[in-house]
Image 1: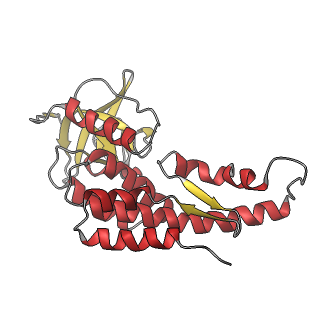
Image 2: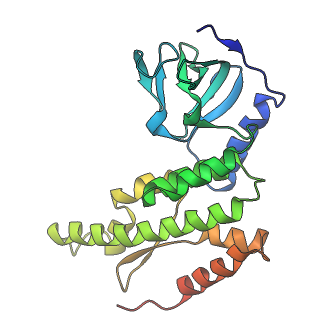
Image 3: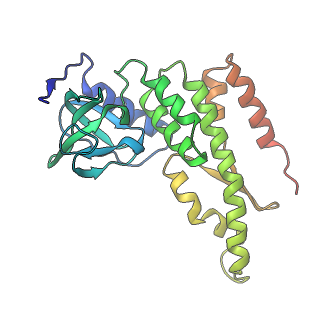
Length: 247
């Protein structure tokens, strides 16, 4: 099927600005790889992010794109089964066809609602990662307070899991009594790394040896959306975070 011309009124530079400025405001320092030209979109559903040689789901796989990867849309095509594919540029040397549902864009109507549904159906890390994509791509969405709450809750859920994992690991490998302080081993635990890349900062309670999310998303809700339902819930979480922890 020959590609049709893909036209959008919103310039790609606007979407790029939202992605970059959103990332910086949340401490997310991972450098985005910006593809040349076209209308920018970002991979949100990595399960569908197979870059193909032609617009067919059974065609030759060129590469699989990771979540958060920016692509430049150059054209569109619908196959016989009704699937819509975008002709995308990934780098100056790499281009191919990508199923349209794999990506989201701030200029495409309803994409914030679609991504919200994806966030709700994932484990704690996937919720964090997809919420991070949402927060960077849709800074003005009415759904933002809801996503911020989900982001923070997923991070605190991950903190409990990471606490158990780190404790088991350090029990098996006794920490040296004459080396670095014990808490510094915990804060350098490798399990924290992938969350840190998503902008999540964990604190460590030395008395209980537990990680906790630092609450940045909840504070943003209280500050920017003080009258929202999410603000009521965010205040509860911040109060729990500030309360003394006991075993």
